[in-house]
Length: 124
Image (cartoon, rainbow, N blue to C red; front, side):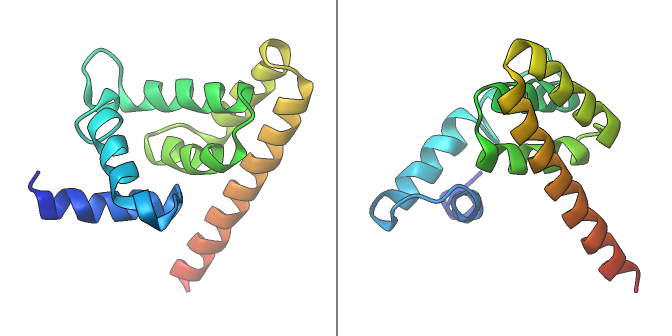
């Protein structure tokens, strides 16, 4: 990936994970270098689907609703079903606590509704 492509990807990422303008590009570069496309998400050993499941569970347990929104969508794109996402969030009620699972269910409901609305618009 050349520098121009990295900058474009960085900007797409920082549109979803905002940072102050003064460090926006550096923040995006850190994410690119450590997370994707060349970071932990590209390693062998776990499928993207499995990585999505782990990430949704962790973000639920850590009560990170902003990133959870992004990763529930990514999980759907990586092959997780709505039922699987809902079940894993319910599972987190036991290991992360009911408050984080309640918040996770709310976020999942929002993501699913936005997907439904987008799909309905696209089918018209």
